[in-house]
Amino acid sequence: MKTRKIKNLTVSEIGTGCMGFSHGYGKIPDEDYSIEAIRKAYDAGCTFFDTAEIYGPNLEPQNKGHNEKIVGKAIKDFRKNIVLATKLHIPTEEAKTDGVYKTLRRHLECSLERLQTDYADLYYLHRINPAVAVEEVAEGMGQLIKDGLIKGWGLSQVPVKIIDRAQKITPLTAIQNIYSMVERGVEEEVIPYCLKNDIGLVAFSPISSGLLSGKVTTKTEFEKVDDVRNFVPQLKKENLAANQPIIDLIERFAKLKNATNAQIALAWMLHKYPNVVPIPGSKNQGRILENLGANEVEFTDTEFKELDSALNACTVYGYRGYDESEGKSFLDKDDK
Image (cartoon, rainbow, N blue to C red; front, side, top):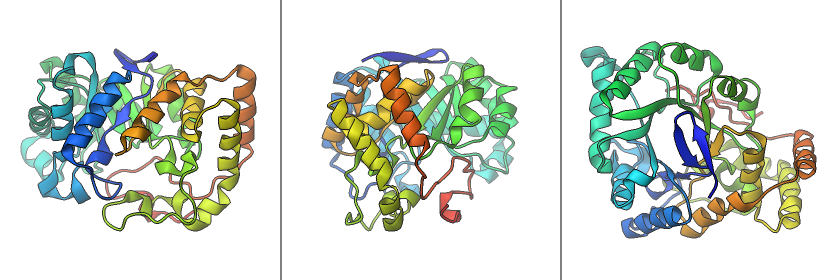
């Protein structure tokens, strides 16, 4: 698989988001199946894996670290050959009592133990905590880099005004924001800022929770427990119907390139920006390998211009947006 640079990190140009093995898509697979899926992704050329301390069934506190433990078991034989990313939330009281650096380090050390490694390549603040200054987080992350515990750091679901404040203290390695054909808000300011400052844009939900695969229809019923797709704006039945022209467009190009819809959605962003690395997630081995196969789909400049221009002409229904600090999410928004 081709590779890309995220500042000082070299990664496969498509990564694997591991959340689905523990949370977000209904019933989770058996642990052995999940471990096998991660190893198959590695065998297929993936060298970039993303997890978080919070990923566990129903996001319940007692399940914290569930996903990190799975990832740690899966990658232990090839840890040195991959780029491993994880994330933390900063509890307000913990930061006030012990300070931000000690809080960061404590959470990181717990993650490293679960991941069976002595360093993380990339450590993100999962969401901004408005009660904790991002400058203090940046300073603490800088110290973790000096400590040799992380190689780089990042922020998630943040606008440029937050990115810039952090960047001035400790240069960022990556921003992990939502980005897809139907979530393009980062194209206006975030991606240009990242390009200018040599920051990677790690795109989560690049297939919009399955919407862009064409496999989700108005008749699709999602699982009732721990399935985020029940809340994704674009997956509401009325928005699924309204967004059908986008799916039809993708389908046309999928036939042209002998690819799947999901592969077209991923290849589109890879062609558009050199600093973007999508991390599609799934709990299904077949889907994971399909997504990684987008690495082989290439557009001519003429083909890409036609696709991008047609996409620009489409209206998106159910826009989520990428500015989501703790206590502020797409669940609070009206559909637009």
